[in-house]
Every structure is written in structure tokens, then in C-alpha cells.
Image (cartoon, rainbow, N blue to C red):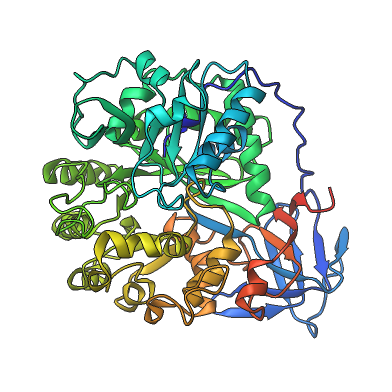
Amino acid sequence: MTTRAFTALAALALPTLALPAPALADQLVENVEGVRIDEEGKVDRFNALWIGDDGRIKGVLDREDERPTDIDFQIDGKGRTLIPGLIDAHLHVMGVGFGALTLDLSDTTSLEEALAKIAEFARENSSRPWILGGGWNQEKWGLGRFPTASELDSAVADKPVYLTRVDGHAGWANSKAMEVAGVTEASTSPPGGRIERLEGSRAPSGVFVDAAESLVYSAIPAPRPAERDLALIEAQKLLHSQGITAAADMGTTIEDWQTYRRAGDRGSLTLRIMAYAGGAEAMEIIAGSRPTPWLYDDKLRLGGVKLYLDGALGSRGAWLKRPYADDPGNIGLPLMTPAQLRNTLVRAAVGQFQPAVHAIGTAANAEVLNAIGEIAESYPGDRRWRIEHAQIVDVADIPKFGEHGIIASMQPVHQTSDRTMAEARMGLDRLGGAYAWKSIAGVGARLAFGSDAPVELADPFAGLATAFTRTDANGEPFGGWLPQERVARADALKAFTADAAFAGFADGRFGRLVVGERADFLFVDRDPMLATPSELRQTKVLETWVGGSQVFSAKK
């Protein structure tokens, strides 16, 4: 996901920043029904949390434990449930923020509904030079094909429009946008991308897949620093309201990094960001020859690099071993050659950077697993190689996840969103390794769960419920889709907390509510370990605390 697809906003006034009150004294959060991941990695219950003046945990107390006497402030939890702050192991921070400021089509269920919403948004934002947004999904619309520029022209024809598909791997342009970008019949698809054409001609249809999106992105004005700052504020508000206290930011640019630094410098960075640079060049521009140190009391670090090996299943850009069942002859789009992948992995490993490789299809997952296997012996140690998504894996390749300490960074909600589409693209007989959480964990890989927001909603409680049920919000399909791949509820919580922290080299800093780690926690209105799946999805975050300071309250 690139933030440029959410930019070119009209002038936006940057609001006065409401900074969290610093934790400057010892606090005792008493009278709670606490749930945490303990020092042994198991679910543990407690009744009070002792927080030091540095925002770190000094004690986790049961009812019978003696309370400290030198407490400056005591907070009555009023019997509410307290859980660790949730960690999203894969999202796009600035994409979330810009998504909140631009057009969101994720709730539309038909092309007609989307076009009406686009037209209304354009009328309400007539001063914007471009109409930008995302979230469209032709599968959800039941369209059976990609939308076209002429259809988008019927909603807005007098100014350029560019809208990113829900998976972030395709974009939809109107004729004006293609004109401004200089895209014509003579334009050629770049390596790793595809210009969709009108049937029977070379005329661009208006949809650009993967690397072809750059043809339009290059014409979109970049956002100004003030607009970026506002987007970060919006992202933090939204994520904290969902109970997210830390996140792995996948694809961080130098502009994103500077936005985070500005917020950190002025004391308004409240989300812990484990940043993964958007490519090797961005990695070196941001960090130089080695990962950055942790900054702003463990709020920010650039420790890795995000690589794309293929596209997405929905746009048929995922790289498969065999052609798509619904598009014979098409195996998707590899975005790196074998040599490019291995050279970049080595480049990262030499500098102690952690690679996080996007792999959706069977061929992409096999390729990155094989590449890691070839390189790992030459670069031993605690590397924590990451594969992002690992959505459709050949069953024969699953055992390779158990080698070399590989982390599978997966998004449970993708399974419910993509289920019927995956069956259409692949055929049910080829989905034995699809969203295979339990099988991958069973061979020794550690799971780190996230949302991929703004591709999906940043709702960790929906992710938790999906992980141990394999059903959607309506309880469908009955009994779960490929139910043998469910994980235990406790393991799902670990994957959204302690294991997500481990995946970002943040273990020992935050994620578990143990002595010495940062006091990042939530008050919620129900016990996530006892609620039914339906109840869990309805969880309301009452308060969010980062480092012993409140950063969100539902009452405010």
C-alpha cells in the first residue's frame, strides 16, 4: 500500500495537538480483572498493576499480594477487564490516516452504489485537485470484472480520480486521470505490473495492477508535511480507539519517517511504531548502515525492510505455481527476479536489518522460503525472517516455515474477506495450505497477527474471533472454513500481543505486561478469553494506555 494513493488533499488545518499526560509518578491500577501473557508465555490473571514513574511495570499483583506503600496515584479499575495493549503486526500507518481523510468505498456493495458515493464526495470536496480514495472491490460488487474508466467518468469527468482497490494492488482511474498521467494506447506495462485493456483493443480500461499503478501515481501531487501530520493524528486516534498500542508499519518511506520524527520531537507520538522501510533504498536513506535505535521511550524504530514478491489474489497478481482456475494461462506477477530477491535479502542481512517479504501465492511463498533456506546458513543468528501474509501456500512447502526461525505474519480477517474469492481463483482442491495458521504454527513457525489496515478494518477483536473460529461476523460458514486451521484462543491473543512484539524485535520492551516492560494496556467491556465469538466482535475499548499514560478514552 502506498500513501501517494491517498494524497493530494485540499489544504487542511492542523489542529492543536492534545498530548497525553506523562506518567511522572508511581501508579497502582487496582481492582481490575486482568488478563496478560506471563513470563512463560501463558495466559495469566491478576488484579492490580504497579507502574513506575518511567511508565514501566514494577509489579503484577494478585488479590493476596501485598500492595506497595509508596504509591503517588491509585486508579480504581472498578472491576473492569484489563488486557495488554494489542499489537498489529502488519498495517500501513499513514495509509490508515490518509484513508480517514479521503474517500472510502469499502462499505459499497455494488458499482452503482460506489459511483453515487464518488459523485457525492466530489461535490462535497470541489476544491480538491484530485479525488482520491480506496476500498473498492469488484468481487464484493458481484461485477465479475474490473470497473472501467468510462464508468468512473459517469460519476466525475471534469477532474482526475484515482481509487485504490481494497487490497492495495490495483487502482481505478477515470479518463481525466489517465490524460493527466499521459497514459495512452501506446503505454506499455512496466515489469511487475499490468495495464488492463478494453477487450479487443489496446485502449487502457482504467485499471492498473501492481507496478503499473506508478504510471498514475507519478502524476498525483505529493502531500505536504502538514497534511502528513494530520494523517498521523487521525491514524493514532483510530488505532487507539480500536485498542492498538503498537504496530508494524509496512513500507515506511522517508516522508513517513520524518512525519513520525516530527511527532516524536513534539511529544505527540503515542503509537509505538516498528517501521519496515519500503525497499532497500528507503532502508538506507532512513537508517544508514544499521537499524536505528529505539527512540522516544520505545515509540519508534526502523529495524527492517518490506519487500514485495508478488501482488494480490483479488487482482490476480498473486504469483502461483499453476494458473488461476478462473483465468487459465495467468499465473500472476512475480515482482522480483530470483537474483533480485536474494541480493536484497543479503543486503539486508549484512546490515542486520530484518527482511519482511510480502508473499501471497504458492509460487511466491515457495520462492521466499527457498531463498531464506539458501541464505540463512551464511547469516546465522537471531534473524527472525518474516513472510508477510503467507496466504496460499503449497502444502508441500509448509514444513519449510519451521526452519531458520521464520515468522509468519498473517492477517486472520483476510480469510473471511477472501474466502469465496479464493475458492473462485484457485478451486477448493488447491486450498489445503490457504490461511493455514495452525499448520504453519505446527511446524514451529511463530505467528504474528495483524489486519493489513487500511486494506481491512483495524479491528483486532474481529481478528481474534476469526482466528479461533474461521467464521465471519455472521458465523459463516457454519463450523468454520477449513476449520482444521483454527488456533486456540490463547494463541490468538499471543499473536496479537507478545508474539507480534517478538516479530518486531520489541520483546522485553512491550507486549506482555510483565515486570520491566512498558505499561501498555486497555480497559475493555468484556473478557476476551470468555466472550463468545459474536460477543468478542462487539468488544468496546473503554480506555487505552501507553507507557502508563492514557491516550484514549471512550468518554471523551
